[in-house]
Image (cartoon, rainbow, N blue to C red):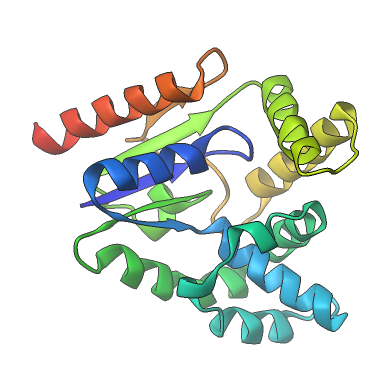
Length: 208
């Protein structure tokens, strides 16, 4: 079974994806971490983000089994990832690896921006997780402050809006809701309620 989850940052899609993977006994891949890993490598090397050949070379060497969420969660790395993700050749370089991960038994839950539209268009169940920008900014600010990062909510909101625009406007695999994806709006839901609704939806879809 393959479950595709898309949506913008801080919508709750990652937490929901991990919960679905645990509930259905599937593997989980946060595809955003792939681009974060590439972005971090370029930052570490002081490389130019317009150097497509360098970015592609790094992308082809990313080990999906060694992606460390804690290390890759830094704000600066997130910005770098957003820039790397708009490079068509980078997305092509990691596409096959993502599909192999999804198709390896017993199946997987993948979350990102183009899972239901490009990576796994034939997924057994698709969700598009979204929330009001102000709520997402509040969530992300609280998350960062809990890690000891001093940052204002308005700064986070501006960053999220910029990333949303960049993800939606890119010519290759833009962030859009697949026509057959179920919209899960988490604006007024706590995470437990959102997970329960996601589990119910997937259960109904795969067993109908």
